[in-house]
Structure formats: C-alpha cells, structure tokens
Image (cartoon, rainbow, N blue to C red; front, side, top):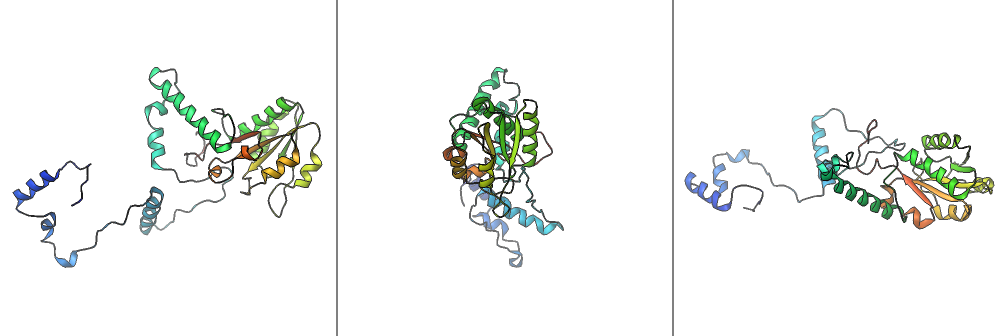
Length: 276
C-alpha cells in the first residue's frame, strides 16, 4: 500500500486496526463483494492541471444536453485557461487588500506584488521599464499616443485600422482635447497586415507616433521590424499587445518598439462584464 503523508492514519495505525478487525490486508475487507461486481478502479498516470480539467470537463458533459461551447469572437477579451493557483494566491490577504496599502501589515506585500508585476512585464515586452499601471488597454494606448506627442513634438498620430476599433475611438477621444490629429492607416485585405504603402504615404514630419496591434484585431501578427524601418527613428512605434501572446512571440522591444501597452485581463482574469 502506497504512503500518503496527508492521511492521518500511519501504517502502525492501520496495522493495529486490521488486527482488531481480524484481517491481514485491506483487500480482505472487500472479500464479501461478489466477483461480478468488481471493476477496475485503477487511476491513470498523473497529468498536468490543464489536461485533468479538460478530461473531467469532457466526462461531465455525459450528463449534459448542452456543451460548453467556446466563443472565438474575442475582440479583446479572450477565454484562457487560468490555473487554480492564480485565484488561491490572489485571494491571500497581502494581495486581496492591496487597495489599502497604507496598512502596515499589507504594504510590503503590495510593493512586492507591484515589483514582480513590473519585472514580468519588462521581460515579456522587452522594455527597460514598466509602470504599474494604467486602467486598461484602451486608456493605456491613448496615453501612449499623448506620450509620443510630448516626446517628439509633432501634433499628429497615425493609427492602424487593424487596431481594436474601441482603442482607436479612445485614442481619438484623448487626442481631441489636446488638438492632436489622428489619422488611420489602412490594412491589406488579403494579408490582414498593415498596408506599408499607405503607411509610407502618410508619414510626414509632424507625425509623432504610429500605433498598431501585435497581434492585431484580426489575430494577425504584424511585421514589426519592417514597420520600424519604414517609419524611421523620428516617429515612435507604439505597440498594443496581448501579454499571453508574448509568451511565444518575439518581444516588441526587441523589434524596435518605443512604447508597449496592453491589457492585463488575459493574465488570470476570466471574461466578465467589467471590474478587473
């Protein structure tokens, strides 16, 4: 019989109980069960958490008339696998009460959490520094556009039409009050990527930044190196990205991005109607 350290009974306890009952093994306790009722209850080899949840979900569907259908529309909010450890750790007191960092018992935990977040974001994006942080992806990319204008001085920003349309609207709203012109750059209908020819036509001396998605709204991966060389050094390249995608894509900072923004929803939050 294997040893399970989390069980309260020791081998000595089990031996003493079997002696009192009058059996020599655990299996003897089931000797009265007719052979025809015996089933194979051996468990499969251990698997990773994602596979176990998937297999159990498939098993549970045998009792359902409706399947748990996935939604692939996305549009900025995606259903990701979230390990159980995420909710368990995030629910700890030093993180859960992070809105009151002035309390001595949680302030150090809050600082630690923010530092770890910034470090991870720098590693994913390939940037030297990271804040902690903006409100969401839309406001972050709009602030990045304003930042480019402050740094470069031009009063115009180019935005890819393949960027999330709500992000485009947010950028226009932010720039309106600062008298910053926002012009969109077309995408190629065949590839779904930015139309480099259209981008070249719209590049002028008063352009401070160019905003694009990586991946873009259609899920297409833009050629950041080509775009970097196209816009030159006088225009800042602002990349709006999905942090989960950066687990396999090259970091934008390594491909010439000046500012990288994104939304933290994929990093452990399930799709919802607001809040996180």
